[in-house]
Each structure stands twice: as structure tokens, then as C-alpha cells.
Amino acid sequence: FMVFFGAYLAYFPLLMESSFGSSSLIIGVVMSTMSITTGIVSARLGWLGQRIRKRGLLQIAFLCYASALLLIPLMPYEFILLPLFLFGVGQGLNIPVVQSCLASLVPIESRGGFMSMNGLSLRIGQTLGPVVMGLSLAVYGIDSVFLLGAVLAIAGFLIVLVGLGDWSGEMDQESM
Image (cartoon, rainbow, N blue to C red):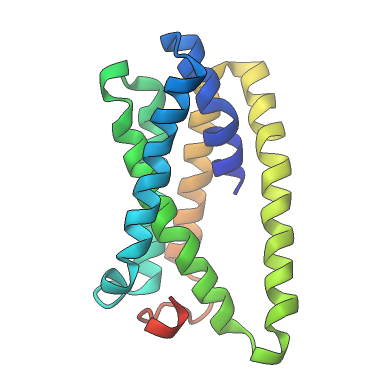
């Protein structure tokens, strides 16, 4: 959530305005590409989950985040949708898979409290993301925001690669 709320939501619009002189309308339309892609990928997650284990889907998601964030400051205006598409694929894989993993980790009677803790972690990332990325911006410039986001995404990939428990099974249709 630090990557999403920090690098993407808070600072991508600033990059679009400062690098390309884009209006708020154009920035909104361009950013909607990520949301549309997220929806499409999430809608196909049941099909993907039958073919790729949860851990693999999360690894792909973090690689998509890292690739997108590394590409964003390098893209000319004509190709800026490519990294947003990749970021949307990452979101479409990551969010539902994480929710499914979390829901399957705890007994039903404890699920509400556990999921509220997940909501708390989301809010912490939502709060810290723009602040941490803003510090990077202030010290190193706008490109560093996306580089730091990519580093965090690679760290996420490595955490999933090493593994945290037994949640690497196939996606069940009920949890989707």
C-alpha cells in the first residue's frame, strides 16, 4: 500500500504534470487505465488461480509493480500507458490474492478482527506512503520516488519468494 498510495497515487500525477504538462483531465483519464486493467485482471483471477498457485500470482504481481515503477520515469508520453497497464496487472493479482490468503489463515470466528487488522495495515501504508515518497522526492527528485517504489516492490517479491507459511496453494473459487 505504500507503493500504491505513495509512488502511484500521490506522485504519478505530479510527474505527468511536470514532465508532460498534462491537465487534470488527461491525468485522470491516463490513470484510469490502471483501474480498468485491475478490474479486468481481478475478474479473470479465478481462471488464473486454477493455473498458477497463490505464491506465483503474488510474485508476478510484485514483478509487475517493480517493472511499472522502473518504467514510469523513462517513458515518453506516447507510451506512458504501458507501465500503468503493468501496475494494474499487479493490483489485479495482488489485492484479491492477499485477501484470499488472509481469509484462509484464520478461523471464521476470528476473521472479522483479523481483517480489521488488515484494514489498519492498509491505512498505515496509505499514510506513510506519501510521506516516505515525499522525503525521497525532496532529497533526490521525482524519479527517486518511482525507484524507491520499485525497490519496495522487489522487497515484496523477495518476501513472497522466501515464503511466509503455507499459503501457496491454488485459489479456491469460494475465496474469490
